[in-house]
Image (cartoon, each protein chain N blue to C red):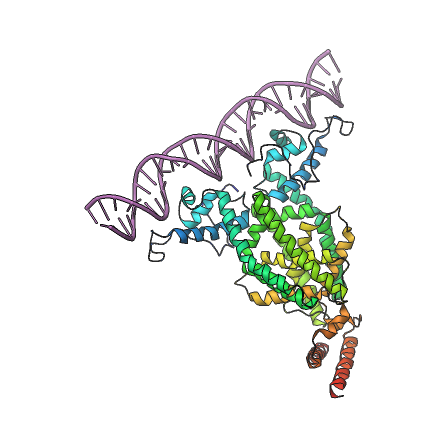
Length: 254
Length: 254
DNA sequence: CATACATTTGACTCATCAGTAAGTCATTAT
DNA sequence: ATAATGACTTACTGATGAGTCAAATGTATG
C-alpha cells in the first residue's frame, strides 16, 4: 500500500476520521493541555486505520495526517507503534469486562432466556464497538504474545459460555442441534460478522439489530415443538408431546 | 512483524505449509519443468501467509522460505507481489462461478428448500476453501480497484439472493423476521465466520458442518407454527415426536 | 559433449517507514 | 519579564522489504 500520491483518506466510503488541522480554536484552549484530547483522537483514528489495513499495513504517517500533525508528533503521545495497539486493546478489554460479568450472571437461567439475554448483550457490545472489534480481529497475528493470550482466553470463555447454555438447553429438551460446539461457533459468527456490516448511522437502530440477531440465534436452536409451550417445565413439554403423538396416531389410523 | 530472528514458521499451530527444501526428488523430475508445480505451491503458501498476516503484512522472503528458495526466485514465477494476490483471487473467483450458477437455479423453489440448499452450497464452498476465503476477506483493502469491484459485486449478489429468498418466505407466511436485509446479513455471517474456525481435519466432517449451519439458518427464520408441516409425511413427524418423548422421559428419570 | 533453456542466486538499487535527536514556539506558572 | 513545559517540527538514522539484473547451476536434447 505505497501511499496513494494525492491525498490521505481519499476513499469514498470514509465518513469517519478526517480532519486536516485542529482548526485554530478547538476547545478554547488552543495548544496547551490539548494532549489528552489528541491522544483520544489518535486512538480513535488508529482504530479505524488498524481495522481497515491491519496493524502491519498501517502507516504512522497516515495516522499523523488524520490528526493534522507530522509523523514524529505521534511519538510524543506514544513511545512506539505497538504501544498504540496495546492502548487500544487495553481500552477494549476494559470496556468488555462489564459485559463478561453480565454474561456470567445470566448463564444459569432457563437456557432459552439465558441464550437470548447473553446473545443480546454480546451482540450489543459488538455493535457499540464495531471498529474496536475489527481491530481485535485484524491484529491478532501482530499482537504481542501476552495480549494475544488474554484475547484468546476471553474468546474461549465466550465460546464456553455459549456451549454450556446450549448443552443445558439440549438436556432439558428445549434445544436441538447436532453438535453444541458447532452451534455455539455458528451463533458467535452471527454476532461477530455484524461488526463488519453494521452501520451505526444506518436505517435500523442498534438495539433492534441486537434483538433480531439474538432472536435468530435462539430460534436456530429451539426444538420446533418446544415453541408450542413456553413452559420451562419438562413435564409440561412431555405432556404436550404425548398429546401430539396420540393425535397423530389417531390421524394415521383414521 | 519484524521477522523473528530464529526461524520462519515457528508458530505452534502451523500444521500446513512448511517445507525447507524440495527434498531432492520431488516428482522424479527434479528441476526442469518444475515451474508449474512450484507456482502452485507458491500460490498455496501465499494464501496461507496472506490469510494470516494480510497482504501488506506478508513478506515475500517468508514466502520464499516456505518454498525453500530465495526471495528473488519468487520473481521468476510472478512479476510482483500484487500479481500473486491477483492470481489467487482469479483462481478463487473461477472456482466460485460454479457455486453462483447452482445458487441461481435454486432461487425460485419453495423458500424453505431454497434457503436450505443455497445456504448449504454456499457454506460448503467456504468450508472447502477456508484459506482462500480468509485471503479475500483480509486483503480487501489492498486489492487493486478492479478486483475489489468484482469482489463487491459478487458479495452483493449473494446478499441479494438470500434477501430475495427470505422475502418470498415471508410473503408466503413461512418465514418471520423483522428485517429481511438484516436476516440475510446474519445468516451470511454464520457461513462466513465458519471460514475462521472450521478445521478440515477436525472431529466433524465438512458436510455435516455445512448441513448444521444451513439447518440453523433455516430454523432461525421459520415461523414457529410452520415447523409442523416441515415434512409432508405424517409418519415422519410421528417418529420424530416419539423420539422426543423417549428422550424427555429419559431426561426426567435420569 | 555442447548448446539451449528453465530455474535460481548474489549482489545490487530504491523507496518506505519506524524511531531518534535537537530545536521551535506558544502558553502558563513564577 | 522570564523560566518552564507541553506540543509540536525539521532533519536525521537504520532497518526492512520490493524489485532488478547479470551471472551461475543445473538438466534435457540435438
